[in-house]
Image (spheres, rainbow, N blue to C red):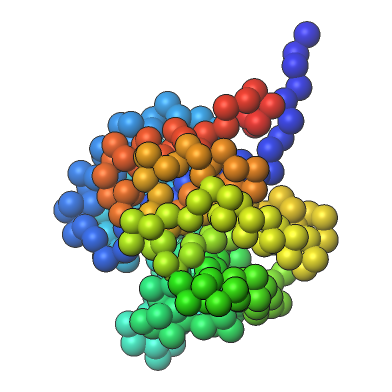
Length: 267
Ligand code: PEP
């Protein structure tokens, strides 16, 4: 008798955001190191997001290894045009890119990536068969003044305005409290899960019952020693990892923490 396993729409996902680290030649070694460790890992989606200049090297090094998908750290919403310094969806696709981080707090802070721009980029991304990882998160002063809920509500509504409901299976959200990114300060599992729960409710309001299946990642100083507690929270579906994703061993340990542990979680 064959036992039917339930398809898990919220299959865990761990993405590494390399930020502005690693030259193309350094990229080859890091990709090889990661692939060696994750080759036998199952039931989880894995993504690495190197700088634009390293995508070709990463793509080439991965070859036919499909265990690791490639992501970009941003993109422009236009297909092409007079946008000096920008990169478009079709350009990313040429290097095998499947995911794109949008609205990361560093881009919101230094590059004016507003909610409105994130919305336009997310719509463009799915049009080019790229899965958007839309980042939201409050600053420390917003949290301390009790505004977290309102900030998240507004970011989710505005960043997802006009997103095509028939494409929500492609959408990933990352909750990244700004005060926890690169600071070593991590949200407690309960603080993180509370916001994830709020986001899930907002997604249901926006997209109907299927909105509950959209994956929501936690990001902000995720390390091997805090990953197990964070990843075991019911509304946390994986992690967006910055610093620790540059260390293949640490990245692997976080991946292990995010992997489903029960047979019914497998797909
Ligand atoms: C990030 O860059 O998205 C991030 C969460 O960074 P870190 O893990 O270094 O805090």
